[in-house]
Image (cartoon, rainbow, N blue to C red; front, top):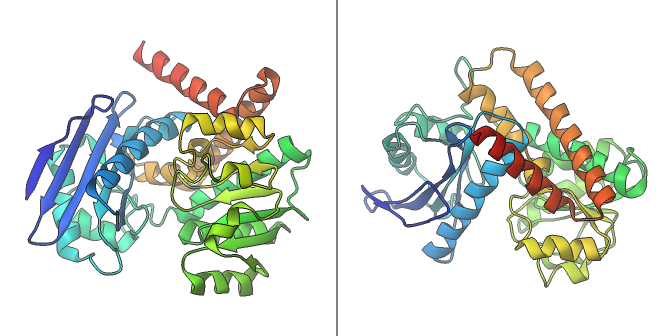
Length: 349
């Protein structure tokens, strides 16, 4: 196993890890431990180049600092990425080797489930480190965070609908959903049960067909999701999809979804604002997952009540952000970042 320090001035600690014997290559980025140990999941996907994976880890780690602060959790921000196809390259040996890397950081970073990972994978990682959450079994096991993540996104969509369309009910509204993995599927079920009409897409055509059958959803090609006419667009796949190419094609009144780092840059928040598209900041909308994981890290006894309370608080935070953005006539993203920076400064003081 090779663990190498990577220079990243805006982050507290970044390491590259490599174990050729098991095909392991990736990065752990710790952005901040100001509020507590850095917490954030590990994702596995076939990046085109190691630099792409590193940049993803850096952006995601920063996003976790903001997400954990917005949820008022005593946790900092970190993230891990493993380069590879989880359907082909993942193995118990690879996961155990990754666990050794996590253990080497001596509790500065707690890992959990993210894209390409399952609770069973967390168990393999947990055989090599105690700094893992999202386990399916154990005294404080939190399991798959996807249902709680989806609940938080659903709440954010309802708040956004109230601010943008003057109605909290989603009955009769059309929501376009990008990404139908664990979170996306749970979200589609909640939206369908609330009476929303669905337009969906995923690179997995079989999953798209399932959603169409289960929820009477209209399926479109992945590239077509940006230009479909809908009330709300819910990105639930990869980040960086709101950019100078996609934003001009959007035909929606609002964006509220679960993907991390939806904005390719902060300038894109202003571009949405100028177009009159209300943006629900992603690190508030998708905070349910880390709330669920936090019950395990913090050893919360009354888990269900604690999660319900935190989800309600996140919903209220989103409401305050959107209200303040309207009063100040600025992008909600700008307001959300300002609020988190204020929280971090107070913590430092």
